[in-house]
Image (cartoon, rainbow, N blue to C red; front, side, top):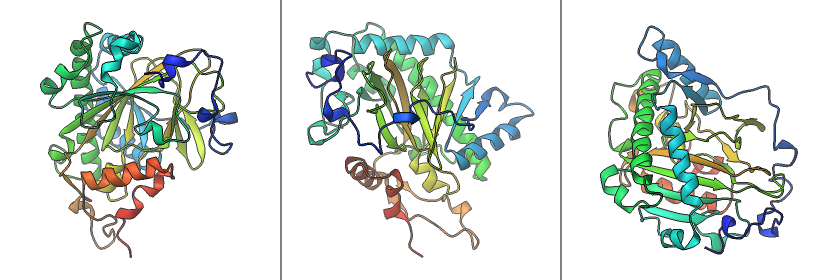
Length: 344
């Protein structure tokens, strides 16, 4: 636990191992003033006469930025607020109560770590402490979650179930937009659910370090709750776009796997997290992912003479190996899918 940022940071010192090279640090882009914004879509319209409009908005955002925000998604303000409180209270627990969850074993159902997996092999560290918790089947996973704070399992479990419902609803709309059959994503491709909970302590100099580097997600889609502190940024054609927190809004990221399934029609959303000099920030990213042996491939309905297959079929565990290797080497996110492209 002595390596965790929250264990040693005095809010004044920024060790060299957290200072990124000039080309990677946020610097003047810490608070970008882009004219582009992340689209805000009203999911409350998906069951009415404006359903087609909702589908079109999702498709446009998924094709251009790889991300969008949703309102009227069905999760109550109280549940979202209570869930963030649980995360804050967990990270504020005494060190001795959190230490038992520290692990580098990715097979565990609840893992507490700092920066990234493989901290000791990193030359540069991210300014964050984090949790990865497995969430499916929920009733099998929650007994491994913390019993402190007292209502953590109850409240976070309820939020997880609701957030998964939102994700499946959005996948239905994406399938419709792609012209795929109803229920296309109701299979092994969405059977696994994981959540990353990120804790970004107040940082002495946010212009020099990062909470999370530029990356796309290993999921089909990701449902992100970022609370009331800004920090999430997307990259479009080299321009940074800040996602300002809006009450009751969830952010949806298109993941690498959706880029494969859509045969490149939809793009994964490149994003990062910056830190804040004044306050601590928490965020929670729920990943909808396949089982390890699930075969990921472009939907056959999207392949024809004018649209040849771009990616070969791969098992999810094969994708994870490539994804983790690229992240470990800190290569550009666009390297992840290159090895799966079918050469012309």
